Length: 321
Image 1 (spheres, one colour):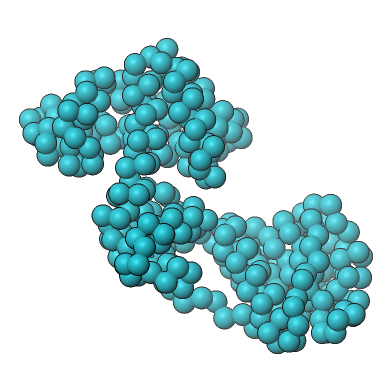
Image 2 (cartoon, rainbow, N blue to C red; image 1 turned 180 degrees about the vertical axis):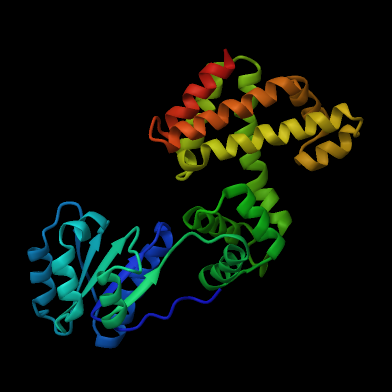
């Protein structure tokens, strides 16, 4: 997947839901202007929910004492745009040449006058989450560009399966993997399993084991450890635990159908005796009930009735009892 070409424009809209891509895009804009003007560009930043248009535009219109243009960023600009839409439409139609205005926001419909004005005089840059082949391509390219390593495509799929689709989380894991492989030029699926897979499964199955044993305190302690060591833990907690229970359910059903424990252990990246003890703690009906309860917790967090963290805590307490 090719990077977006940054042009030197007087106004930008960096739009989308992927914070990692938006952050890197804004850095790229500042770098491009620094290269163009030949001086270090240190932008002014304003919080969209609290800033007034007059203050922001005064900053944009003020010539830099160091020469060149001023860079002014409005973060979380959705409410800022809503409050000042008409004036922003007017400004973006005829922006000044003394400064650069960068609006970072979650959405900007293409049928609005503001979108059309920025598309004409500036640059619209969309930073939506990547999925499927686009995500895999980004991982391969980013690993090469940022860490100088070749990422095996199967390794990319496995890493996304374990970590999720957050580019920030994937970048963090790729950084660790690049150190883990040392002087070797490529990151393989085996490397991903060694460094990420086993650690992630230990975290998840540690919680499920404690819940199955009725040890609520231990399960909550392990959950708090996940939060402390994983910046994206709350965001993908429900999905991570759901993956763990689905994996256990699948292994349990295969075991009851006669699949040898050795074969199942290879699927679970553990030893037969460890897996046998783990499966003995669960029955099929219990695992199915846990998945239903997780679905309810997921719905509650997405509907604003609970946070992901508190939803998981409530799930652990209820299902461990």
